[in-house]
Image (cartoon, rainbow, N blue to C red; front, side, top):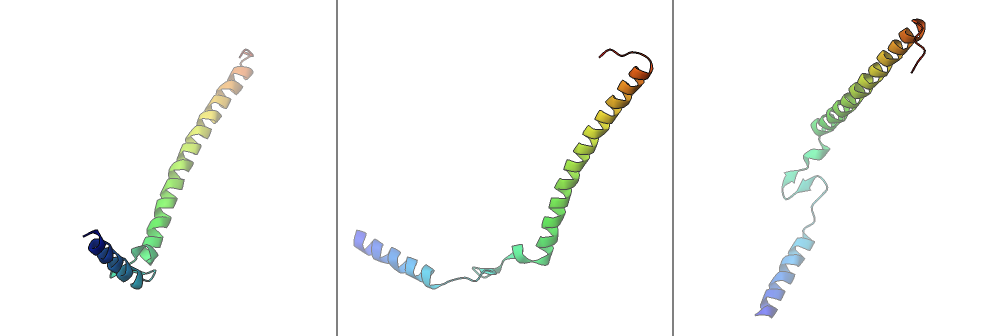
Length: 82
């Protein structure tokens, strides 16, 4: 029995090996990852992630600027302590 199963598996593997799909087709479906719409979607996701990161950076820098202005005001008022 094991021999029959092994032979069947070999035939199946050979059929799979003989049938090679192109880069743009997999089992009859076109690869959507190569489409223009997918390219724009990836750019949009990347831009959105960058936008979120930059907003965080701006918020941090604005906090540092606010703290610097406070410190400048303290120095001008004569409070030189830290």
